[in-house]
Image (cartoon, rainbow over all chains, first blue to last red; front, side, top):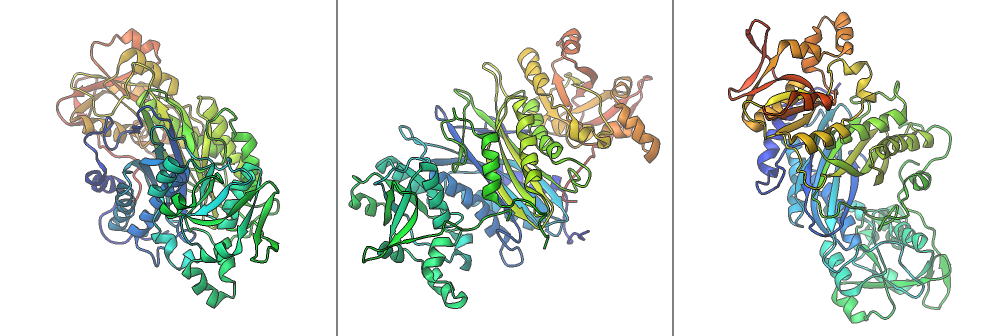
Length: 311
Length: 311
């Protein structure tokens, strides 16, 4: 059994400290009732959940609790970005290790809440638990599309679509997995202006997550070698120097980049894509599988693999 | 590190097995996208989350995984009951111990989903993770009030209100904490027909959860000794025989009964309450604190305590 650190204890005291942080006097159901309220007038509500575990998704020996809370919110905001939707509110459930202090626990929830607020997405409820095992934090998020917009699914890519990325990928383990900026504004803007056929955020790796789009859409894809190499993050090159994997391998298979993969109809103007910060990656094919095309036209198959739980 | 049991592994295979269980062809966003969709046309959406941990809320050495999944859903359904709301859909996030088999993992989610379906509340999305620590399951739930109804909050009790319970309490540890029936139908009916001032479900104990209503409402309460003793569950008496605590102490302070505490205006007819399966417990007072009134009129203070995490 873990011996609790000195200082104030108790779920009741924790909730008392969270109340001034989270209470919204204008909410139809106040802080600390059995359920919270979501307000998305006239729009369907999108929702999702992500769970992070100490030692797997973060390391509390190294990372600050506020930064961990930020990440728990950020991975959920990234799901909203991938649907082209505006985050609205979040719930935060925690199983706190008994080794945490009261300040740690408040910092964790505050980290999630304050980062969410930057995107219009407060923590409006949750569940606080404790135990003798490592800390778990699970954030649920709700989002709405803008009027006239639809959620962007992953199954709408078609042969001939162009593939774009919101930013460079690979090597996020060097720190970006904790500090990345979810592409919420880009996702909304892309949905509003470009009507993408499919979109997904890169949580388990470019190849694996693009593979999910292709599988759901019944398509394949060809990545342009020059474009792909231009999208290798400096962190991927840096990691490559010590682990012997190529920078491109990092870019294809590392997880937690949280950039968006976007499939756009071929008639979309490149200038419009560039104006939204998108970089070209390749195109969707009728033939299944994922391949890289070299400058000389030669095609090479890419294995669809990345981070997978429960192996 | 836990050595995985023999048999199929992998999150991808797990999700493949969950798809036929959870996929809803009529949903605007299909199975396995970044987010699911909630449909509560024209009504505000209520939502909540509860997290259960192995060794704290259940014991996987003793309990079946399907029964654990059922409980994870049931505690959330109970939150909907406490708001007088109809559950609509749920998300299920899991951190699976690596000691689980694929069949265990499917049974866990299936247990949640199939129990939810009995209340019109399918699992529509989630997050699957694994690690070397005990299993965690976190269900988020969404609910809507019926047209013309409002969510029943915990802060509306007023001096003079009568307090009622949906059933007997105490001793749930003997097994009911895993097999209880959430009072969803009763909660809806009470909201529709009786317009209660306040309602809460008993998760941490009658005294503690009633205390939450009283604190939020700025009131106190007196419990009638004869009524209270009539609401002692046989399990409370049974436990009392071995642990030396009185049956009444179990009824007041044991958690996980998941009966509803209902505060009704004094003019509500007793016959209407009885018809809905409610039993009388006492009344709300302007004076703060919780007390028991004996047959001879004598008042005795009750300590507001029960299960508290993070002690």
